[in-house]
Length: 244
Ligand code: OAD
Image (tube, rainbow, N blue to C red):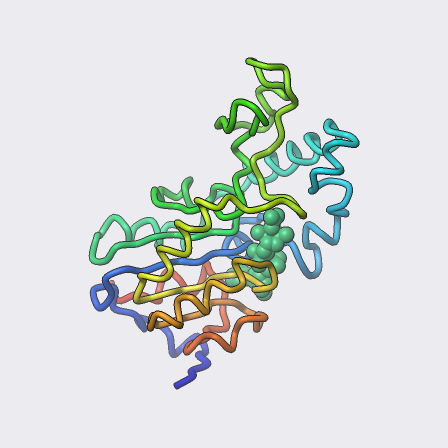
């Protein structure tokens, strides 16, 4: 049965102890109320910046400093934002241990971790990691990149983010799909559902019999996959969705 819920209907809709494993599947809308812009639509990152100039390997090969400068601007703006009540609710639910909680996110902003979540699968990489083609990935937290070249081999470091045209990390995808295929409650928050393979993840959950709930103020490309869609924002819905 499909349900389309308005704000008065979803308070205490979910009893966490009814589920063994809960997956929160998040996209840019999850961080919107923290002040981090989404990608698509009015005021979105890809409206303001042409990804062909800032978010693909070709752009980095052409002008690495321009691409690194763009990512420093993004780091600065994310550092000026803070996790909201929705991020905190997810982190607290994991601490209560009534169910196993996993987060599978398309976000690179690290906001779930800043709210205290530990088990975060980052499908599209992280704004807080750099990658050397020879020596692999290093953490690098702060507004300005600590270095733009590898200290061991002098190669250029690039953000460890899945840019347009990049392949996703196979192990990370397998971990995400594995978590989703074994969950009994799948809650999608703030994704337009147009970027693959992540857009196919609701189907994985549904096929395996999980209860599927979507939280988004607008219909997404994948709304039809969900038995319940809640038209609301992450910061308003998440703090009251679960029975305390
Ligand atoms: P999009 O920008 O495509 O979609 C954001 C979604 O969030 C839309 O469906 C909005 O309706 C919804 N939204 C907005 N405000 C919200 C709020 N307060 N609460 C809940 N939902 C809200 O972002 P993604 O779907 O995450 O990839 O985009 C997927 C990928 O495309 C990103 O990871 C990024 C981008 O190119 C890379 O950079 C690799």
